[in-house]
Image (cartoon, rainbow, N blue to C red):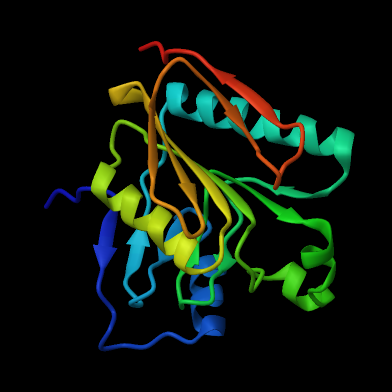
Length: 194
């Protein structure tokens, strides 16, 4: 039997509490598991070298900007956020404004933070289905994410998601701005190479 990842396991019949989901993830560190708003478990595909390098470069740019401004906290793709809509999601890179982060208790910070990031980056890899990623971006917005960028190397495009606004599609190359949320964060995105 061959499994195709990402694998979506519908456990709506078996409701996992937040603590049970946390323990499932901790007990299976070799798996990257998310949970959508409906409670379905999603076993994520590991990324290849090109996608991993792109992900690190994008997250690195966010980290460098935040290191200079100290306006918040930056998170890697290994961080799962417990969203208000019931999903437990892990963006490829995320940023949370400092006072929002500081409002969490130490225990909340140690586990899966019960907060929507203010800003998220998602990067489509070869194995990612675009409509699935677009639905994930909408799930972020529904949970309070203010700004999100979905990079789509196969189409040489980036989709911009803003809370309360229609999605914006840009062809590459393009200049992206963190707008008022991430003041001074500018990112020149060239064509993605194969």
